[in-house]
Length: 345
Image (cartoon, rainbow, N blue to C red):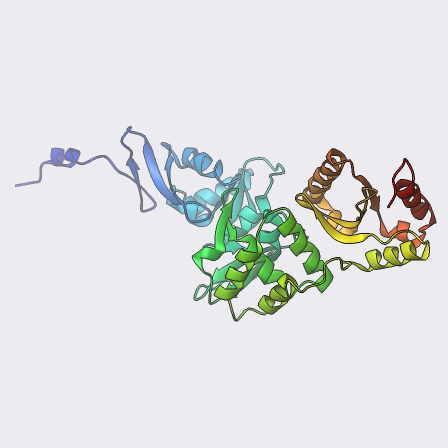
């Protein structure tokens, strides 16, 4: 006796696309389970693979990888067809941008995490996302925990570690990354002492991290080469008022040579640090180097610092290295600011 074909209707209809089960949700809409960037699961709705693709891309800055395309029903042939049409644009091997070529913030970081699955942003990329480091110009840095392995590739630098505690991982703008304290630890031995001191003071002054968090992170990673360097900078015995750049040292020498009062160095005013400061006169100097004051993040930070100084009646003078090379005009302005308008240092 043959099987009753009507018996099949007792189960919910399931569509088979390239071996992937596309099942209806409670509302009757077909969905496919997709692992989004950073490891989050998502039920992508849609009757067709293209409809599901739009739902996934909308949650990943219009980026998608080959694994996700397969999960929502795309075959290799379907991918090739859409690449030829320009509907998918290859960013890295197995990673595609969806739709027109438009500038999207954090697109490179999203692409790197889609290319190196199970990785997190780290080092300079994590520090830049946290707001206290300049992003690397040519590559995104990510970290993988062993035994996972992936090679670096153009535009992506892969770091491997045997230890990466969950306490050292956070998420920003939907992207997994190492915490600010772990990022600071990872770059500590790649920066000069002055550069690291600047970044550390900036992060502490803006409350992006705390000395306690740094010490806890170093304790979790006692093998890390950056640990002793950071702990030395956090030592309470560290001299306050040291200069952080050659330009500051040169300018300080010129100030003393001109007979102006000695300023305090690296003074914290609210969430910001001032390079040179005459508190009685409420006059400050900020050395603007190209390395640390370029980019939109630095621009916004500098504008906030300017506004904070105005709110506290502090006259802030921004100085470039070229102005230090020819210091006389600057020294005249500083003397007028310190002694003029009834101010006495």
